[in-house]
Amino acid sequence: MRAAMLRTLLQRSTRVRQLATDARVAVVGGGLSGSLCALSLAARGVPCCVYDQGASGGRFGGSAQRERPELGTQFFRASSDRFRSLLGELEKRNLVGRWRVAPERFGLLGSHGGGFLPREAVPRGTMPALATMRDGGDFCGFIEGDGDLWSAPDNAVVCEAIREMGGVELKPSGRVEAIERVEDGWRVEGKEFEAVVVASHGPSLAATAVAAAAAETADPAVVARLTGLVEAIARVRESRCAVVSAVVEVEGGEAIPFDAVTTPSSSVLQFLAREASKPGRADAGNAWTVVSTSSFADKRPGNDAVASLGLLLADEALRLLCPHGAKLTSAVGAKMWRAAFSAETLEGWSRGAEHAVVLEPYRLAICGDFVRAAACPVEAAALSGLEAGDRVAAVLLGGAN
Image (tube, rainbow, N blue to C red; front, side):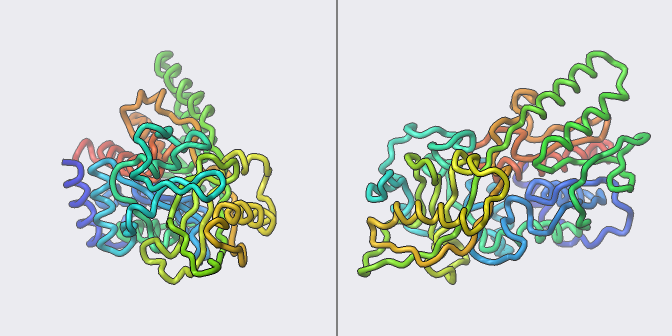
């Protein structure tokens, strides 16, 4: 039912143009969650605008320069009908695609590189399901996740395209530091709105907004409930990771027997993938993208020098690939994600029943991959944004669907 509704909304959104009326909702954060929230609102006729520091799509987008290699999201899976429906619609627009390589070329790589085990040969239940919570597990459900593997030919354009589908205005801004409560509404960057959606992965902004709502509440039970939410948001912790692309050559004509692997025994790397094997990236040559463990990233405060960071990761990648005849020619890009994965979520507060937190009396919503735990953070972010848009629109339209 919800998947059919999503298809209808997406089809309707292709006919939506820039909304003439002033925005009623401010969405703070232009990543996947915020962009899909805005699309859901606009498709229902609720004007909104998105505040974001850039146009590349947050952590999903990876690089505002839109240059390969991809240093953002590497892959995603769909376990719900709604996310599968969304991916199907985006696939029609050539924004995403299935990772169509032989399944035996995906798997697990041993600590010394030579021990490659295809995914089908790994016994089910042997790896932690939620690798986003820890190193050394099943990276984003790569081994034990269900459904096809998907990727985007160009991550940086996906969120922008989603907003354009809904005719949603993007307001490039610096970091939004505060959301102010005003009479029956909210003020963001000096402009007043009927409702606000916090789709930023930083927890402090959401906590400030909830605290503002609690400050005007007289009911002790409600105050206690909102205070509990503020405390839950404060407990959200996001782990770091570093991503680098290294160009390798293969000596002696021996092909590396895999295209993507998780490496649970490495203290440095969690995941390696051949860029040219991904949808729409056949021109990536012999570049490999490498994702570090959070423990590796946590030992390097701030944004370590790109050259130094890239070489450290590239050296470890080479150590794992060299048994297959690889040699490093260059490390061409690196990125430190200070908030890559959510190590804690709001699931305890929301009791796991909702993908988004919506405080209807205050017209305030919080969405993102940190609301509900999931093996695939991309799916968690998408479902959270869509649900926030659904519910905020229902509030503003008096329950109409």
